[in-house]
Length: 328
Image (cartoon, rainbow, N blue to C red):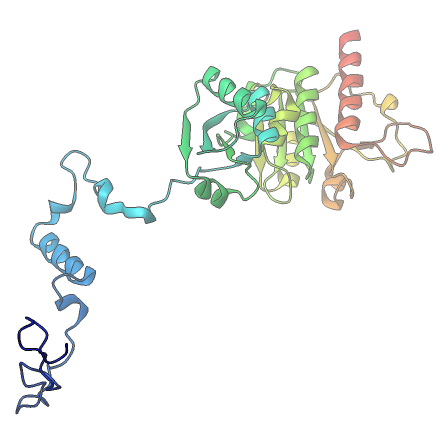
């Protein structure tokens, strides 16, 4: 029963409160611990470790680099390191990359995201890349999407196109010369188709403006069906000045314009050195370029058709010129 002294542990003291210590009730209870030290002064804080590493690097500048390459070790890069973005143009998307590789578009490497679903298109793209001896890099999906949000996990880096100069084209041209000049053609597929036709009908080179015109992109490469690798293409800053230079070399400058009264079949200088000038898809020849032309001709067609595509009109004109030269 309670209070029985014969039971060990049954008697408990009735005194309440702490049995040891002062409970903070002494003369030091109001003494402060001082100001909070700075982050860099706390031994286990990340700022303190950075400060220590910076001081060590200052004492020995080569301490943070590897002896062979002089670059920062991989461990110091951390999670914030990023891949080197491809220089120049890229082709993104499974269908686009596959078509570019099938067309043997000059490329530098293939980027593939880790963990993507390998379907038939990706598998064939990787096989073609291996066949073309292209390097394949496997990177994080977030990094691939950072380069192109619509990449679908695969990107093809295109090699920058090496343009020729107008002087190089004229120096390598055979007499009679045949040069195609493009005045503001903005569709890369039209550009590629024109280059393809130029290669088929013995054109010495293609000249186009640098600004407000299509460039040799992957779409142009595919449309050219490989002709861009053999056809010299030059970019000029002023097409009117280039036309004047062509005239000094003995070229007749022929402009293609659907509104002209002169017909292609009535042209009598097909066997001479020629520069064929093609206007843009919507506006045609610019005023200054039109004035520089020696002759402006049109292609006869049904009145129900308003105009021809720039690449189609160029192909017809080049075919007719080639036929006239073959007869002579």
